[in-house]
Length: 218
Ligand SMILES: O=P(O)(O)OC[C@H]1O[C@H](OP(=O)(O)OP(=O)(O)O)[C@H](O)[C@@H]1O
Ligand SMILES: O=c1cc[nH]c(=O)[nH]1
Ligand SMILES: [Mg+2]
Image 1 (cartoon, rainbow, N blue to C red):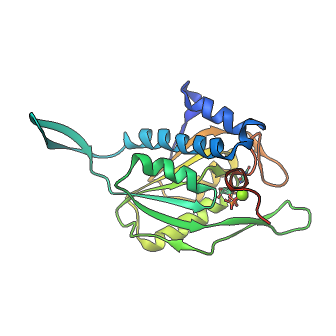
Image 2: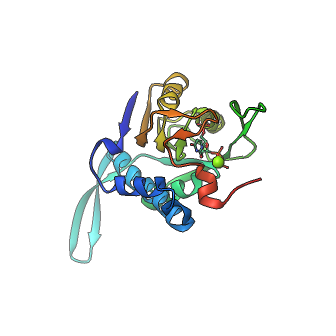
Image 3: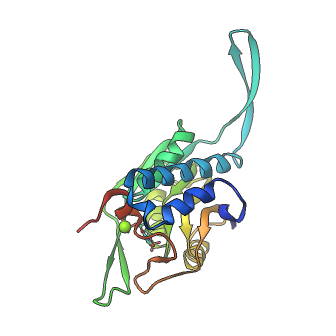
């Protein structure tokens, strides 16, 4: 399984990562969501390089141009709610794509708040049969939400290829994907952080993605 980690290469994406991590800068929700979206746009552009392409003629006012255009049928899937701005970034780039949504939220299952259960309640998805399925969720912590999201989406068919896209992943989350996803899966993440704390938050990470985008939920 191929794993691509963006901040191993110097690019402007590292600035967006730094801003979403910064405990003061991240308080501006508009800027926070915008940076998540911009990381989605950059990841989408890189993922587009893995697609199949075919030559197509385009009539300009002055003649005929030939361009290599992507032929993959893309479905952009996301996990509510923190996935929404990230999803928008992908859709800005793959504006012809179909879209799929699943809800998943983590709740603590013990008093010490060291074990999480994941709840899936909502699925709205097109056929993913033979499609290029991009599942975009900013945080890959334990990997449980991604796995349950994937299992919901494949009720709608078998994708040709799966791209797991996130902003920050953990080694544990990546291991989880390796064990639960098929070989035709590629992982894309802005950064891989070393660990999770006892509450299963990524450290150093940036905090709760959903709350930073939309405010605390009760
Ligand atoms: O890898 P995992 O351990 O499953 O954690 C990752 C999940 O956590 C976040 O969602 P959260 O549950 O906080 O829901 P929210 O979007 O409503 O905030 C994030 O968007 C992922 O879906
Ligand atoms: O650090 C984390 C882990 C899971 N979900 C988040 O939003 N943040
Ligand atoms: Mg959250």
